[in-house]
Image (cartoon, rainbow, N blue to C red; front, side, top):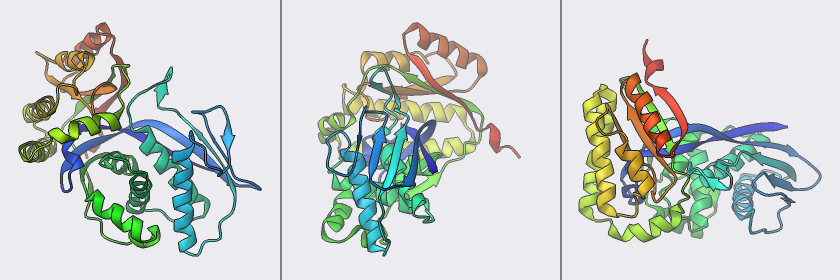
Length: 335
């Protein structure tokens, strides 16, 4: 039995702009995990704790994302001369509570998880670029409208700066050629680790409102213009630089700018709960904003002293915002 796991993710900055090729976003891995166990067996059996039943490879609506991931990886393996065998796959870890998802990129996480499990099962050495390309290929073939930034972060399991590729171009390649050929090419993306040069607390607040990212993206995409794109790119670059230099004031300023850019893009991004989550950092040595597509799910905050962190957590609790995750960032980097 082989066991693998994948994390969640949340955006710090660059949401929506990242839908355009060559744009930048800053995304943080969240160590809330999905886990899979896989082994060769007599027949195909796939089970996820999202559902109370198991399936084989016969198409099933609930399991379509997992089944399409398996189909693509099987194609990839067959093209590389691998003899395919049936297996049993069990997936656990819902990234939700009481039927409400957290918004940590669970669909991206499950795709990466299934690919990781299959490649490990066949004893293939996996690098993060191949994982990212195979996972992106699954979503592109499904017509997913996301930027693939969540996949980049989930694969890297770190705080990353992601530069997006031209999804239309790669989708065309995938229609015309087999996936084993397409993943050998240069797609024109980059994924690089960002190392903060100071200590701070990173907090995730959950509004318990469910947002449907694909619908939000569809609705808001038409508002994206060149001015928004250039402003977003400059803001993400400045934020990454400020993090590297450990400049708290500049970090606060750039995260606030990123937040204002989102507000200017569409009033629907900030729900009343997300606005309260953000406003709770006012007057403190901290900054908070919505994360990802908006319209619900989670917001993030960075706090630069212990007392501020406690105050912010208390304010969130009073507002009914649940502290989903907290991490001290930058303290491991000191030599």
